[in-house]
Image (tube, rainbow, N blue to C red; front, top):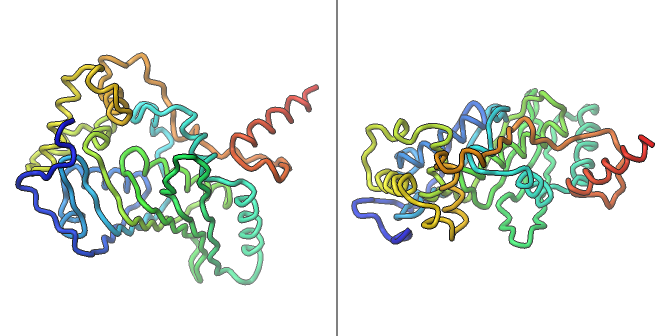
Length: 303
């Protein structure tokens, strides 16, 4: 994709310091509206404190209030992003220390029973992956005076908004369910130092909603660039895109004519933290370790 990081002729950007404050009903709506704003180069985000070139659009200092942590249970990460179950396992293994999470759950349950209904307790995300970039930094679980709905404040170093953001939203939703119980209502406040969308990755939104519908009547250098890249993918061959992982993932999800038989569903409702009333040893910390321990335990009990 030649000219990936070159300036776009006619595109005016403004990187002046600015705070973007947004509010959405659910995590799902936040993901949808953010992606469509990036695709359209919406002035709500890009009038100041943002920039773009021929390959990527970036918005700095984004604060989002989400009234309810909720991702559609039937959202299909497999079809939309060509993800496999191992992607969820890797995310959990990288960021979640279950011993820390269990201690937090115990602490918050104790606080709930006490007179003091106001608390702010922070979970610092792990980063075990060798190539991890520490995109998720912390999640502070809060209960405020005279408010019934807990608030989780997510701090992100950086967020890729198409395939990664909705994965992070689901992770925090599952953490809330792990601590407060399934069916809980939780508000999310998110602060990201920067949010960005690559032209090649933003195109994956087409698997959720047609880009032609999203961009109908929109005419600016960035949106035109996205459609230009989209058309190249629609007309291209596997050989043109298989050498670079990000391009190839987009190519595979955008070309059902070539890969229909390889698509495997992976619904949000299947991606859980799998809480069980099992007394795990202290050294059984990660998601994979707990799955293995549970499997061996059940096998032993069945004998």
